[in-house]
Structures are given as C-alpha cells and as structure tokens.
Image (cartoon, rainbow, N blue to C red; front, side, top):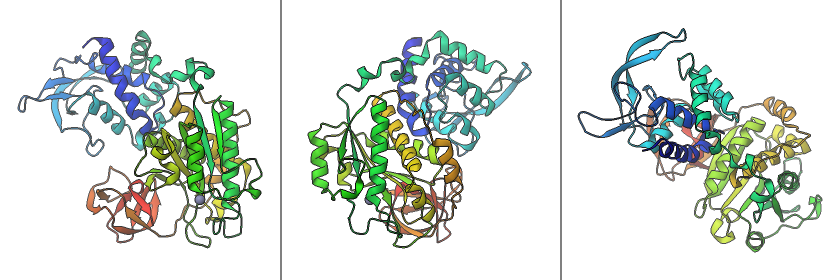
Length: 454
Ligand SMILES: [Zn+2]
C-alpha cells in the first residue's frame, strides 16, 4: 500500500465512524495513524502495527499504538504482548513491555480508536472542530507521552494536506452544495388535537410550530430550501391536524431529501419528572436516517444539556423513508410537556430556537453544507437555564428493542455485565444517567437507546 492508499483507507473509516462519536475533525486522526504506524508499515522494531500472530498466523492490526485497557474497546480481537520504547515528557526514552490491542482489519482498528477515546477521560476531544486544538486536547488527555507529539502529528497532517478530508463544505460555496436539496419541516399534530398539551393547557402544536419556524430560518440562512408540512405561518393556533398520509404526500411531492418532524414528549397526564430529549427514526424503512439522527441527538445534547434519551427506532409513518422518498427522516422529541421545568422552557422562543438551530446544524452536516451560526445566538443563556432544572426522574416502563441487551453494574460500557435481557421484555426504569437506565429489580443498568418507552 502506498502512503496515499493508506491515507484513503484510514480516512474512509474515520469518516464512517466519527459522527457516532461526536468527532468533528478526522484530519488529526488520519495523521495519528500515519505517524503511529509509519503509514501502515509499522515503524517500531517489532513491527507491532501489522504483524502475524506467531501462534494463529493471523494478521493483527493496531494503527494507533493503542495499549490494551480492559473494557474500553469491544471491536478488538484480543491483544498481544510486545516490547518497545516510549518517550517520556522530558524527552528521554524508556523501554516498555506491554499489551497492545489486536484488530482484525483496518476498519476495526479505526473503530477501536473511536471506542478507546469514547470515555470521560477524553471528553475534551469531542465536538472540537479545529484540527490543531484536537491534537492539543488529545495529548492533554494522556493519549501520548512524547513531548513533541502534537508538533509531529501536526507536521504529518500538513505534509499530507489531510484537512481535505474534513468537512468538504467549508471550502465549497453554499449555492453549489445545496442545489436541489429540499428539507421538509413538519410540525406535529394540530392546534386542537385532543390530549396533546401540557397539564396547564399549552398545546404541543404551538411548540412544534415555533421549533419548525426557527428551523426554517436557520436552514434558509445556510442556503437550504425547505418545505412547511402541517403549518403555514407563524400562527399555530389556526392549524388543523393534518393526517399523516397527507404529510407523507407533501414530503414526497416536494422531492425532499431530508425531513424532520417536531414533537414534544409526554409521560402520563399530570406533572412528573420524566424528562429529556430524544430522536426517533423508522424501525422498518430508515434508509440513512440513523446517521442524521445521531448527529441531531449529539448536537441537541451538547446544546441544552438536557437528559440524553438517545436515538430510538419506532414504527413511524412520518419517518418512513420508503413511502416519502427521503434519504433521512427523523422525529425529534424536544422534551417532556409533562415536566414542569421543560414545559416552561418550551413556551419560550429561545428554547425552541436553540432546539431548531441544533437540528439545522445536524442537517447541514448531513447534507454537506456549512452551517452558519445565527448572529444572535442564545445558546449560552439557554444552557444555563436547562442545567438548573432538576434531574430526578419518575419510574417508567421500557420494552427491550434489540435481540439481546447487556445489563451492566453501572451506567456505562466500562462496567461489568451482570446479565442479559431479551427483545420484547418490559422493565421498570427508576433512574437515568448518561443515556442509561437503572432497572427497578436492582439487576443493573441498560442502554436506553435500545429500548422503547411503553
Ligand atoms: Zn407529538
């Protein structure tokens, strides 16, 4: 493999997996792989990046010089022990003998890198858009001990012009990229739809229209064409409820590539503590929706610091890409109308605007258009307000929505597995943390994105 072929290979997989881990630049990651592995040949005396296992004869791949750490990575195939040297902060080299991750192929090697850095220790690399800052941060997180690490990786990045793999949109005029792309913005329900209101009578549709209108403003600012579905102007009070089949037809007729449907969640009838933001996609015809949904959910959580309820799949007509002819269709539940603090936020323009900007940002990233920030950003203000809302949750029921789901001793993949639960089983969640739910039985925690609230 030539250097350029190696770069293309790493770039392909870095691009594929980065969005799932909220990594915004891949040029520093490609440069790390080039430097750590000598462009895939192995720069170390023992050629530890790609060598045959002496016992099994299999190739083992580790392009990022990652030392084995229990419970950090799930896509590796064991590890191998090898000696080498490591540069300390004072510039001296010390011999080390350690275990290194072993991966089956380049793709798993790249995914392994993202899994490895997807923990609280590396939180400062997530969301960073500047390649140099990314390197400064990852070094500060303890990724490398070499004193010239940032400088060396940066030089590799520049020598190979690797920023060409970062968002293409930043160097391309908006008008070229957006031609022919239409985004449908749907506002759920109608003003008088039964039930769909806060316990104190504020209608869900009014909230949905506010978000939809702000989303339209944001996308138009970025040069993206939009279509209104089930709302016609800023006045939500005179909107009838549009049947789902009609909404689908509008989206299809306008040849929309992307659609977003705005909704607000509810739990029970009165006020309670269920809260947070979630993004839904179709369970039967999602096309490429998961990519967009993950982006949207990541931005939403980053924006308002609400409870992260994750990306979920459901049988949803308004997300059915096949019927509507869309490439990606999502439904955003911006919060709970039955949570007093979230309901009060939803009644404000600034909260709806913040939600809309985050979704617009995700859509721009997804279709490859540069997102242009609003000049009157309210994000910082709103973050403070949401942070102050209470975080307790009432208990609620969830149904397992994947074949087998691991139950862990704590809220994260770093905790040991205690048992498994199966598709279709229903459990009571009594506490939430970082997208994980605690089982009432005391058996442990499950990842809520693999469940459906029932
Ligand atoms: Zn709704």
